[in-house]
Amino acid sequence: MLQLPTALLLALAVVVPVQAAKPFRLAMEDTRVGELPSGWIAAKSGEGQGSVWRIVADDTVPGGKALAQVSADGPKRFYNLCVAKEPKLRDLDMSVAFKAVAGKIDQGGGLVWRYKDAKNYYVTRINPLENNFRLYKVVDGKRRQLATADLKVAADRWHVLRVTHRGNRIQCYYAGRAFLDVTDDTFPEAGQIGFWTKADAQTRFAALRVDESK
Image (cartoon, helix red, strand yellow):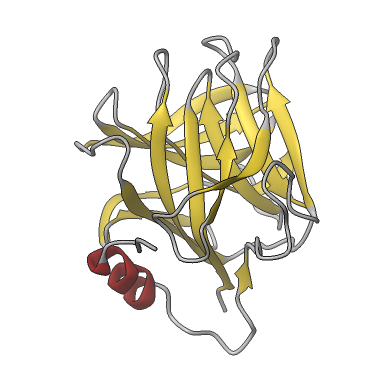
């Protein structure tokens, strides 16, 4: 079985500090290919078809499985969401490995946190088509950019994305480097966490780890 590149595994190991509480992880071992893991729900923001999430076989990651958004039907202004019912966190340190598999309108994707519902949350994402790394808040279904950085990443390869949010300070990292650093008070309360892609972006996620920051 092929593995995640050593550099990515090291990045996941060093960028997320060990907390006293047990970190939250995405458990896929007991979920069959084609199903959604227990405790996760698919949601969407926008009109149209899409947001189809399931476990897929992928021999390039440990365990041989990844969680993927597999629909190519999402229109341009459509957000695909997959959210964990628990835990609900305010301050956190969250990382994930992602791989952009396909998408003509959009590619890539990222992490969601302090999620209230499908129209209100924070999201950071990387888009290989646009060569950028961005942080947004989605308020009443409208996406508003908080920060952006130019960043070239290859599609069909695994990359590590991380976000920390403490109080009103948000920092977003790619491969261990902080590219985005802002303050925002829109969503001050705890919320759910999850994954995000836009339009027809078909992306795989693995090695999720979430620590509650103290």
